[in-house]
Image 1 (cartoon, rainbow, N blue to C red):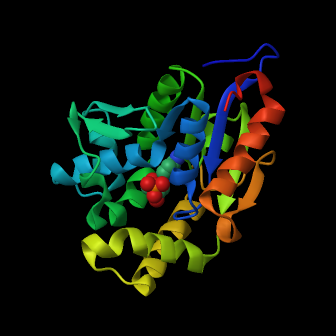
Image 2: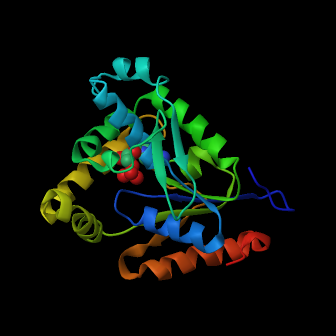
Length: 233
Ligand code: DC
């Protein structure tokens, strides 16, 4: 991992519930700063996709734990071309399938899954200055990150955004989307291990009333303040 002259970890942690704008914000910040970008949700999705393709019962935590170390997992850290790879094959489109979305919370609650993926995420963070998004980045994966953001938005705004992304492909309504987001957030926030929570030292940003650029600017301003020598944007 990269540290500045004062010892601060050159990393931005972006956590928050589904549909709050984490991916667009984290990618945008990474590309403005010329840093790496890590979408940890894509890694949980990729493992879930692989388990489903292997006919593993994802509701059986023991069955999931027994297979978790089998596939190789990697991601592209370039914010211009993010991608996730299982056993060397790109699965970036497949992991957005509704079937994967429905199953990913159960898989990500299994301790052996989190242990393996957090270890890979920390290895990937070694590659350079980085913006990392997920649910437990500021609390567990990178508690020393110089900048921590907890991104939220109203339920309506989150459902609108996700429905706009999905409707084209899957014909899903805003109401369905809201129900799916609710269910996933409930599972992700109430699980025993590393639940979605705001780190004590994270700054909460409500993206509802802001454009994407405005949110990105707020995060970049935090980077300038905390690690000025790395804020070259
Ligand atoms: O951000 P996303 O919707 O692609 O994430 C998919 C799921 O992965 C999410 O429902 C919870 C899980 N996840 C997690 O448990 N920890 C993370 N750091 C990132 C995602």
